[in-house]
Length: 320
Image 1: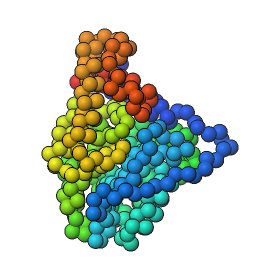
Image 2 (image 1 turned 120 degrees about the horizontal axis):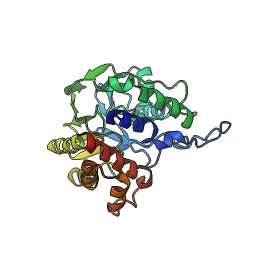
Image 3 (image 1 turned 135 degrees about the vertical axis):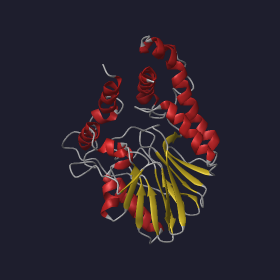
């Protein structure tokens, strides 16, 4: 069977197991207890940190980060969070900090937990920027099916009114976006974590938004990633020498090289532990059991993600 077909099936039905278990009964409406608390990490830069857990109705799919930079003529947001209600809350928090309007949203990549809030930013007039490969995702059956399942499992926060939103500006490799005298250097990285990964560097703040190229405090989600490209992407992040890195998941980093090393070492170990079995076409189960996961097994989402991460890397090595 074609390996790409297998990986696409995995992308829809396996790598997001939380989409296939409904937390609440049909007649139970979850209580809204989720609050967003922007953290200031630089003079004009803030971010909100998602939970280190699987998406659910209870957490409104607040499992990823978003950030924003306040400029003299408008606010630039990076990522839109995992449901429209979260985006509404983020917009409300931004209004508490500045009177400036949100003028731009940069999508680090088109994964559900980063994009389901886009429609709320579109509604208030923000221009959306994303990497061109995102068009392939938006037109895919994977995206359509994932939204259908999310509308069920994250209801009422993701529902029939939640839409997949296209970008206004599709970026090829690089774009320098200047707003209010503040420069945003947007670069494609990858294919890496996703085919359309972007990182955003703000030199005046010495802050880099890494998207899901960097994870902190939890097991990374590998999915259908290009692990070789991802490792190269981590090297690209370090070349900017930022003071602060805001990851897609986990707390912000004031020691980027040390924290990037966690994601790098995890990816390297996945490749090292799966490589021989993948190349020799040996059974995956045996290779997984032989690997030493002790460094990671106590971390959040290890049980939910690690085995599938290893299996996806096993498959991808066979396809290289």
